Image (cartoon, rainbow, N blue to C red; front, top):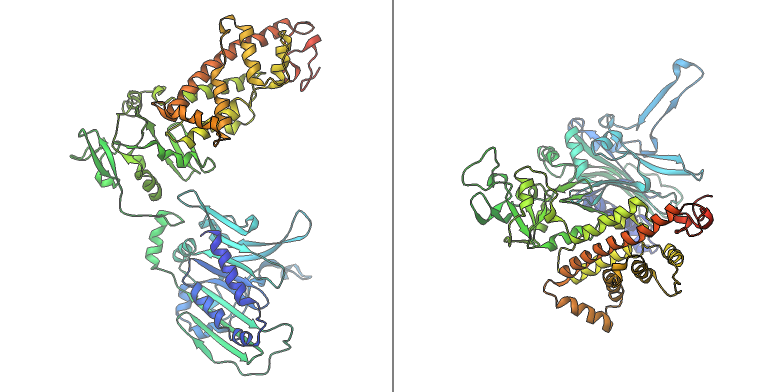
Length: 606
C-alpha cells in the first residue's frame, strides 16, 4: 500500500502512546480501551501492525504453524514470553570446544504452541559510515525470498512495483531511538497472506500495554492475576489501579482475510493485486470480414492464423485511437519509454507494434492490447475511434508479410533533425555540442493539435539544438574568416553570416527555420504578450494547425542543418588541411581543431 497507510498507522499508535495530562483522560487511557480498539480495527485493514516498540506499547507478531494452534486453547497462549530483542543469532562458547555452538534463538517462546513460531523481522544495529550504530530492520529471509524483496532496505522501505509501474511498500519500518516516539513496522497484507497461506501459517499478535505516567509511577501494587477476557480475536488480561496505572497483556489471532484456497489461487496473478473487470471491447477494423465492429479483448472473441475459427476476427485486427492517447506516456518519461513502435513501463508491461496511419491516428492490435493491465486498457478505450485511414503499406508488409522495411510512413520530420544531431554528436563537430544526451533522446514527433504539446516540443528541440551551438567556436571562426563579430551577435546571427560567406549560392539564406524555432521558444515564455498572440494566431490559421507547423518547421530545420554541415564542415576541413604551423589555420583549440602557430590550446594539450 502507499506510504500514507504506514504513516497513518504511526499517527494512530502515537495517539494511544502518550499519557494524557488531564486526570479524566488519564483514567480512561489506563484502561487500554483505545489500544484494544486499535488492534481490532487493524486486524481488518490492508496494512498490518507487525511490531511496535515503546515504553508503553509492545506489539510483536509471529507466524505460527496453523496445525499447532488447533490443539491449544487461546487462554493457554497468554503465558507467552520472548520478544523482538531476543530474536538473534549468536555464539555460545566456554572454555571447552565441545560446549561452543551457534545459538539460533527465535524466542524463547512459551507455551509449547509457540515453540515453532518465527518472527517476520529482526531488529539489528550495524555500523554506519559515520561510525555510529545504525538501527535496521531485517525481514525474515524466507518471506523476503518469496516476496522478491531484499532482506534489508535503506530507509526501512521494502518495495515492489505493481502492474502499473508504481512503487508499493511491502514492508515499512519507522525506527526511533528516542523512547518518547514509538518504532513501528507494518506489512502489506496481500503478499503476506500469500506467504501465510502457502506455508500454512497463522499470524499471532502478542501485545503488552504498560499504561502509566513515568513521572508519577513507582511500582505495581500486589494483586491477584486479573481474569481472562476474550472476544472474537482477542484474549487478554487487564489490570487497573484506578486513576493511577494499568496494563493489558494478551494475544490476538489474525485469521486470513479469505479462504486459503482463494489466496493460493491468487499466486497465478503475481505478488500484488491486479485490477480486473469485464473484458473491454474496442471499435476494430475486422479485416478478415471487411467490417468495422466492436470486438472484445476476451481471448474467446478472436482467433489466430493457426486456429482460424470461423466467424471470429483475427487477434491481429487493429483498433484505432486519437493521437492524444500517447500524451500520458510522453509526459512521464521517467516511468514510460516510447521506443519506435513499442511502449514499455519499467519492465512491468509492454505494448508492441503500435503505429500511425496517414490520418494521424495511432493503431494497436487486439492481441497486444489484451496483454496490458486493465487500467491501461481502460485508458486506451477512452481514445478509441473508427479508422479514418488504413494501415500504411509498409506496416502491412512488415507485420503481415514478414518483410523488413525502413517504415518511412512512421518517420516524422523531427526524426530527420534528431538523426542529423546524432550524426554531429558522433562526429564531435566543433560547432555543435550535445549538452544533454537524455534530452536529445526525448525529442519526439507531435501527435496532437494541442498548443501545449507544440510548445513543449518546440521548447525541447530548441534547448537541445540551439543551445548546443558553440558560440565561442563560432566567434573565433568568424574572425578567422575575416569577419568582425559584434558583441551582441549570437550564435544564429553568426551561423547565417558564416553560411553566406562560405557558400556563394546561399547568399540569401536567412536560416529562417532556426530563427523561427528560437522565436517560438521565446514567445511561448511570454504567452500573454501581443507578439505571442499574433504568432499563435498565424499558426492557428494554418489548415494543418500546430502539428503541421511543427512538421513543416522540422523539414526546414533539416535542410538548414545540412547547409550548416556543408559550410562549417568545409571550414574545419580547410583548417585541418593547412595543419600545424599555418598562420591561416582555422578552428579553435578546445574543439580539437588546430589553432594559430600549430598550438593546441583549451582542453587539448600541446
